[in-house]
Image (cartoon, rainbow over all chains, first blue to last red; front, side, top):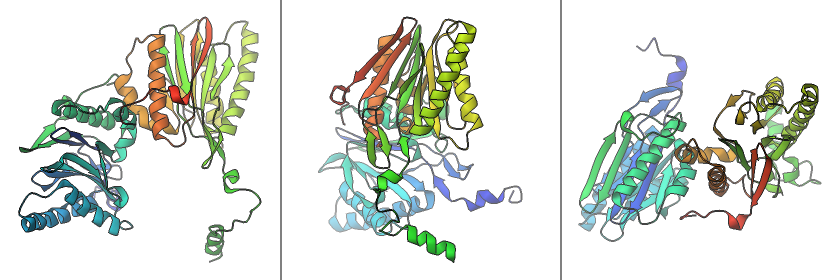
Length: 216
Length: 231
């Protein structure tokens, strides 16, 4: 197996060239991602779940270098566990996002990963935070990864304030599907996580069950 | 060692040519959003109106929809000089050909003339062109000739730097069998979304509808562009 692989495959960094999205609704958030991990032209994992748990009701979506993104998520998961024991209750989404931001900013020259942090807490309800390049900003929705360029127009046009949970889920699935059909670095299946007061619900939508559009 | 030294010098704060501002040393580019849609009976084409040299907007009311013949237009993206030169050359060739034929030229002919030039000079040119128009044989047609010089006919096509951002919108909102007004509305929306996201696109939205009866041009000014809920 090793002899068959070409040199270039092992020299390219493993990237989650990706599409990730998170949307707030009244009472929670919906996160979505594709499942493709590439090293150069090869797809090294076609079923990777890029929605990583940071705490019971806080998840983050990974993009960029797979190693960097996973490491940041693991570190923040640990820091949040300690923090939530110290304060004796569930952590705020803003706290999780700040921890991610601190790592992204301090090591911004060495890291190449962008995490979108989203979740539910008692104080603020559903919240989505972007931490690109070490900034911290709360937004009603956020897209990221290489596939996001192709769907900026779509999300700008289709996003409405005050969507219901089901509308948000459909919006996320449509966006991921469109991005996967245009971006070579995104593909596979779509993973969805819906977080509200009751907890987090994970879902996987297979390739043939994704919505199709006019030229497919 | 010598190569390193000269590379460092060019990154100095004081550039060698202080008489000309930095933006004037950049190439003039129609970093752009262009698109074209076929409908039954013709085509609708659209473009933004921004021409940039680096970060300076050299022209904020550019017309990137260039007539090649009575019922054939091209949408230009890439280097402004290259696309103007190619469009002028094709206009001349097509005019001559039309006189020889003694009938209006076909859109496919115009598109292939663009392709021949863009392919032959592919290393020197930076031009992405969409050719669209109406002819008696096949009605409304859109041909895209991106950088590199390939040609393909598509019912709807987008181009330019801003096009990346509206692929998702185009895939989800285009339906075959739209009317002329629906196509105009679709183009206006798509151009607006691209202009909001792409720094190299902006200004006004220029549209044109080409049918058997001729060309109808429209301009949608900045404050009249559709608004989307979160922008």
